[in-house]
Length: 500
Image 1 (cartoon, rainbow, N blue to C red):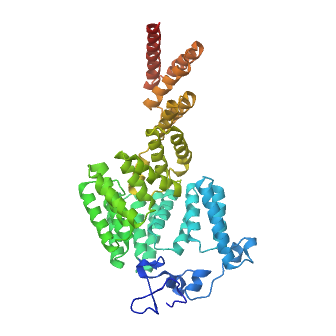
Image 2 (image 1 turned 180 degrees about the vertical axis):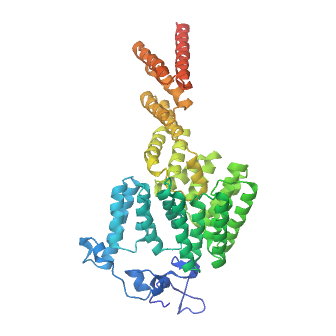
C-alpha cells in the first residue's frame, strides 16, 4: 500500500524516505485476519460496499449510498458535509440516549446512518436502543450492519446472539428456533472455513442459546468451536475468552478446576497480546470470581484490573470492577474516582451508578446518594434485561434485589427526616417483595412516627393493620406487622409515662 493510499504509514529506520506499515499498532489493522483493514474493506470479494472516504483510501471509487435512504436535505450535500452532519446527529443521539430518551435517540442514530452509511457506532447504538425497547428483530438487523463494517468485534457478535435468545425465549418452538440459528451459523462457517471469528460466534451460540440437550453438551460443542477458531487464527483473542466463558459456564460453574483452566487460557491470551486491556481484564475477572466464590486473593484481581487500565486508561469495565474491590476494602476515595470515570463517560452503567449511590450514602452525602439512587431506579426497568458482557457484573445484576435497593434509598430519606417519602418507598418495596421484613418493620415504625401526637392517625394505622389480617389471613406478615405495631406503641406509651 502506498503513502498516497494510507495516511498512517510512517518512515522506517532503514528507509526514512519510504513509509512503513504500523501493523498491530495501527487502529485499522485487523488482528484476526492479519491484514490491513483498508485493503479488506475495498476488496471486491469482501462482500461489503464502503462509500466515502474509506473506499477511496482503499484504492477504489467511492460508492454512493442509496439516495432513497438519505434524507431529502442530504441528497445534494457533499461527502464531507454529510460526514459532519452525521457527527452532529450522533452526538445528539448520545445526549438523548444518556438522558434515557430512547425514542429521540433512535431518530438521531438513524439520521446518522442516512448521512454516513459507514458510521459504525450509529448501527451499534441503534441496536442497543432496539434491544432496550424489546424490538429484538430490529436490533438483530442493526448489529448485522455493524458487523458488516467491523466483523472482528466479538462483543457485537455476543450482543446479536442475545437478541436471538430474547426473540425466541418462551415460545412453544423455542428449542427448534435456537437450533435453526445454530444451523445458520454452521452453514456460514462451512462457506467460509478460514473465518475464525465466525467460529467464535458459533461457539457463543452454543453457550447462550439453551437447548433441550442440556448445558454439558452445549459446553462441549462450544469448546470445540473455540479450539477450531484458535487453530484457524492463533491470534483471535476472543476465542480464548470464549474458552474462559466455557470453562466457567458463563459464571455458573466456579470451582478450583474451572478457575485453573480459565486462568490458563487468559494468560495465553496475554502472551499473544500483552498490550490488550481486555486481556488483563478477563484475567482479573477470573481472580475476582475466585475471590467471591472460593475465597481467593483480592489483590490478584486488583493487580490485573490495574494492568488493564495501564493499557487503556478509559477501560470502563476495569474501572468499575476495580472501584468495587476498593470500596469493599474501604478505599472510598479511590473507588469514587473509578465510579465517577464510568458514570461521566456512560451513565447507563447501572452497577456503577448504584455503587456510587451506596458510597455516597456510607459517607453521609445524602443529596448525592438520593440523586444516584433515583437515577438507578429510573433506568432499572429499561436495562434489567440488557445483555452485560462481563461475567462478574452480569452476576451482580442478576442477584440484585429491587426491593433491597428501594429500601436503601428509603433509609437515606429516613435519615434526612423525610418520613413521608421514606414510608412511600418502603411501601413500594413491599409491593415488589411482600415478605420483605425490613420494609415492613420500617413502614410500621414510620406510621408511628408520623402519627405521634395524633390519636386519630394512630387509630387509623391500627385499623389498617387489623384489616390486613382479614385480607390475607394465611400470611404471616400481617400478623407480624400488627404485633410489631402493638409492641412499638406499648413501648412508646411506657416511655412517655416514665418521662412524666
